[in-house]
Image (cartoon, rainbow, N blue to C red; front, top):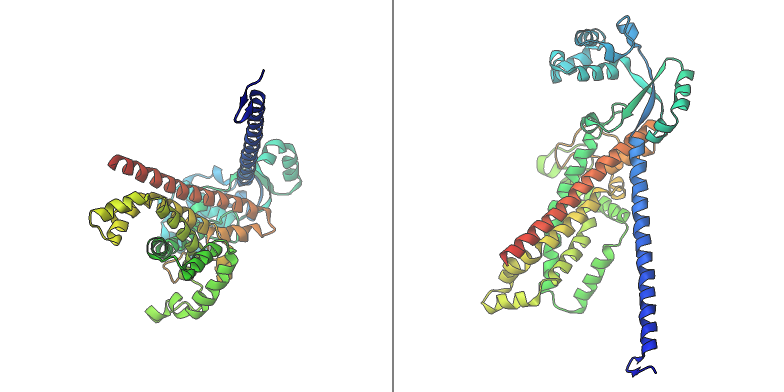
Length: 419
């Protein structure tokens, strides 16, 4: 005979527990499936990018090596003395003078000399490129293609290398690099951080610690949440109207130096940094408010109990207790700004520029804009260097996110040790 309990009979309780276990297993399986699917998509993305960053390339030289040094078929066969002699004999006077000014030929490595000859004398052009998977599994078809093209040859190329990082932009994909775009991204992120961090944290402290609970502040808080979800292109239009046009004398530098870049017209690093600062400002405010809310009220009461003022309590007790969360949220917000393209395109960032930015009043481009510009070109080689640039951008984002995690863990350990 089954016993009657407040929750039903034993059979009812057993059925209820079994039902809960089944529901739990279903949810667990669904969550595991979602996680697996997310990892699969991320793996496919990384594979696609890496697959396009390496592979065979079919080239054709404008000038054959055999016409420069009889009996030699490839530039790798030339000795150092032959490389220097060919460079002096075939480089134009202007290019040779510039090369010697940067670094004399006798002090350059053989690899540098080969690069100079390839760029200015031999001038190889890309006929076709293949991905890494095609290079591994379609080797016979690739060789047949090269045999069908006169004076062509095949080489395995890694599109991402030290020269890709240090070279500036070029119309030749074989010699194009991301130095200018990388410097532009770093300048933009620095300006964004300098403006967004103090203003965002200060606003969050006021709204959370000082602001009264009234209609105005509730509306203000609601609008901050809404602004965090506004499409980034809207911020680009705002930046164009305010920083590029209304504040042109400031963002172009004419107000401070009396001289401005007539081709920039306010479309400078300062304008880009301020626009992205507006973009991430609501996110920093919300993250900081959540960090302040997480601080126990007992900590504030204890500080007040020993005679500390409100600001002393905030500065010496509340902020140290949540600074790790604030810094983590800020770095993640700035990481989002690093990958933005639409706002910077709207304010007039350059799509092709070979001059490195020298200050906040310089014209600029960034890595996402450079990737977009290369991806839009019809030549296959540009898609390869776009994939290489994506890898650099991902590494930069991973470094910033890893820095956020390291700072959070370090400060958390420090707080535990002090307590």
